[in-house]
Structure formats: structure tokens, C-alpha cells
Length: 344
Image (tube, rainbow, N blue to C red; front, top):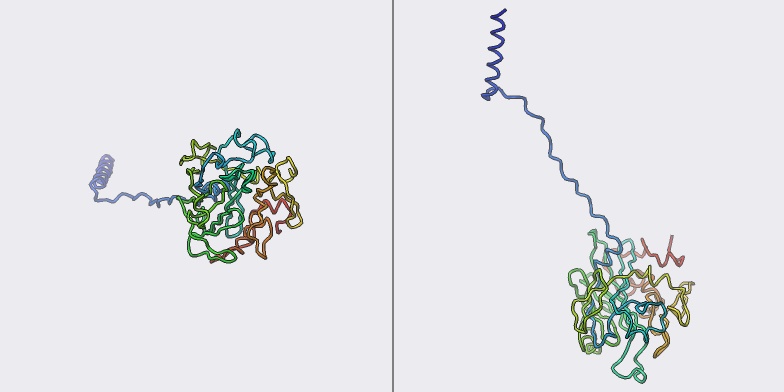
């Protein structure tokens, strides 16, 4: 028995020695495949994120503080016909109103700039060119191309009684409107040029020979979107932050506040629904400033007052021609929904 035990011990030690010397291959460990990191697609942007991403850089011609943009209730109330008187003492912190509407193929981003006064060099009592309140706007069309924020395709700006069409490349051409020129970008933000005095908005500084003297006569205030609503330090302030305010939560809920001494006035009928076309105003003319949904400009034979804001897909399909798909079916249009005009 002792000899057998001795043999077993020797054999065991020999095997261990062989294993340690590498002559006997140990059992290999199981092969574990590397785990590929899971890449989740970025969530789609909210409408507020879209509005901020494309919020315009505003190059505002400025002669006096009457050219500063602000909120409609800058004087602490929603009365429209006291804004001329309130302008010298009201809060001129910069605000821009916005809206986002979505179709199956595009986003339509609308931005409105408010000034309490539209004025002239001459005495307003005799010039005939002044009026209380001024609200002019732009519309940016963004294609949903599979990227998170899409691709800007066209920019429209409102200047007085005309809408100007600008493009970002040759994928958009004119239709009812001629293409005025190429839009300008600072990063992803379209740059717009706003006249002093009359506050017409253009997508390029060279638009129209008649407006050039008014774009940069005096100083230039440059507004960019930010977290704060700031007041320019002077008419040459190039770093002013403006705050975005949603039209749907500010101006639109007051659409029934209509009449003299109220917010809005000038009722009109849009597809059987009554809406106010103007901000109430009395100084140097009656109700001269349109609401975002009350613009009559550039309707042609197809559009009606209000379509540019309320039915932008229809308006842009008439104004311009787009290569690729351009759907008229809305994914999100809270205004037509509220009016009971959204297609099921």
C-alpha cells in the first residue's frame, strides 16, 4: 500500500510540473464576445428646441429706442391703444414671438417682432407714415430630412405689404413669388435685417433699392436668442439677448379680447371662424398693425387672409416650388385644431 501511495503522489506531482512547464495545455477559459455599446437614436426635438435652434439673428436698424423690439404687454397691460403713449416709459426688454407647425415632411417656424411705434423722421402729425403698434414676421421652412433638426429650405420675410422669398440652395424655386435672393445663416440661425423707422424685415441687406437707406441709418442693434430679455445699451449694441415667447400661449389665447381699448380689433372671418386681424391702436391711424394670423399680404387667387400663419403648408406650396416631397397634411397645427378646422 505504501508503494502504491508513493506512485500516486509522484504521478500527481509530475502532472502538475508538466502543466506548469507548459507542456500540458490547461483548459482554456470560455470565449466571451465583446458587448457592443447600444446606440440609441437621439429623441426628436421639442417644438421649443426647434424654435431656439433656428431662432433668427436680428440686425435691427436703430435711430432711437423706438426701434427696439419688445413684448406686446411691455407696459404691463394688454391694452393695445395705449402703447404709443407707454413707449417712453415701458419695459423695452427684447422678446420675439414664435410658433411651430408640423406636416408629414416639414416644420414651419414663424417668428414675430413687435415695436410699439412705427414712426418717421418727420413730425408724425403731418407725415402720414406713423402708426401705433407694429408686428412684422418671418417664416422659416425646414425639411425633415432624417437628421434631428432637419434642413432649412426657404425663408420668407414680411416688409410692410409684401412677402419676400429667400432660399438656402437651388432645391427651392419661385412660384407665385419670385425668389428674392439667398438667405444668410449664422451657424444654423437665419440672419434678418430690419429697417429703422418702419421695421420692414428682409432676408438680405441688399433687398430692394428703396429700403437700403433705412436698414442701417443710425446704429445697428444685433439681437440673438438667449435666456434673458435684455434692453440694448444704445443704438449700437451688438450683443443683446432676446427671449422667445410662444404665440400659442401668449397672443392666441387673447384672440377673443377684441374691441376698442382691448388687445385686438378689426374682426375678420377665416373659414367661417371670426378672428381679429389687428392689434387695437388709435394713434396716427386706426388698427394698423396686423396679428400674426391676420396678415392679408400676398394672397393671390388661392390664399386668403390668415393662411400664411394658420395654413403655412398651403401658403408656401403656392408661394414657392419645392423639390422632393412636400406634404399638406399636418401632424401638428394647434390653431386649426382650436378652430375646428383640422382634418381628421
